[in-house]
Amino acid sequence: MAEFRADPAYVAGLGNAVGEIGRDNQRIAAFIGEHGAPGEFYSGPIIAALMNPLKEFAEAAEARMLDIADVNIWTSVELNKAAWMYYDQEAQNYAALNAHTGHLGGDSYASGPATEMQGITEGYGGAESFPKPEEIKLDPPAANKEDLAALISEASGWLGDVNEAIKNSTRMAGMEWDALGSVLSPITGNWNELVRIGESHKIAGNAFEVSARNMADGMRRVSDEWDGKAAASFDEHAGRQREAMAWEGPVGRTVAVGLGMAAERIRQAIITVISKLEELLESQVSFDGVLDTVKFWAKKIPVVGTTAQMAALGRIIWKVADMVLALVDEIREMVDRIKEFLSAVTNPIGKAHGKLDDRLSPITSKIDDYTRRTAFTEDLKKVNNYDSTFNRPKEAFEVGAGKDPWADG
Image (cartoon, rainbow, N blue to C red; front, side):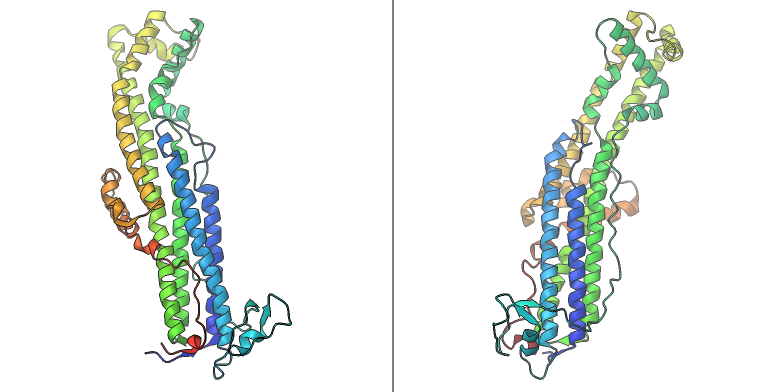
């Protein structure tokens, strides 16, 4: 059993540090509220299924972070009171605390030294300085629209010209047909918005990990200056709070990896389709030389070749329809797994959700880099430990009543 001892300056310094961590937590929660959900550029049939799950996930994350922030801020208030309790340790009463507390009902209220006065307490003077070892960083990622035209140009500059020729030809015939747009439509979507959302959660999660490390530093600094029942109670309380804050880090990084890979898969699927179209169109050269004419004249005049030639090119484009459907199925599987993960973390109910690494195996298997795959797997294991968030304190730390603040522990 540890004998009671306390340096009020260190307890007050710890209170200030915990309060600053709580204010950081509020800033992180506000960041998620602003940047963590789909924004105005979110669009596309393939990612529509993630719209509501992402909104709910961001709302749950913000609420969780605000709960943690509130607990830290009110714990800071309690530690400031504890510092005044320890101002005169020989007396072991509430006289010093009451002398620096303003009763909410007015100055006429009187409280004896054996009872804590309820009210607003002055900040403890002469508190030790507990500078944060790390500052949180909340630089929002850029919000960009997808640029399908640029992607087509990157994959095959002349294919866009061929498609424009078809559009011009059919427009003059009375019904414009965007053949390339039609065949790509099932897999298009603002993949950049998925990346932005994922990076926002990664930034917030990393910032919460910083807060967890800052909490651990505060606990370390006070460990040699505060012992007894109240100190042990604080260690237990702060330890659970620190684990809950640290849990947010792997959650954010896992979401970032999943959404980033889905975005890249959409982008690569579009490139695959474009490359296949390019291959099929180039094969046309060996039959009638139409392609060379198209490549040259598509940039010169709005109508290229005969209607029959344009129809032939249109039929070639539609030959990739089966490929598009197969790609849609593959991307949809990845999207469905991400939905399951978001649901599991939004409403964690322990083992009922099963192992997250099994749910995200299609993503894990596609991470080629060993170091990145190992880091992703480790983060999944941490996320799967729901106890870290389940067991977080729901109320602020309390130093105790009666003689508890001065009791041996």
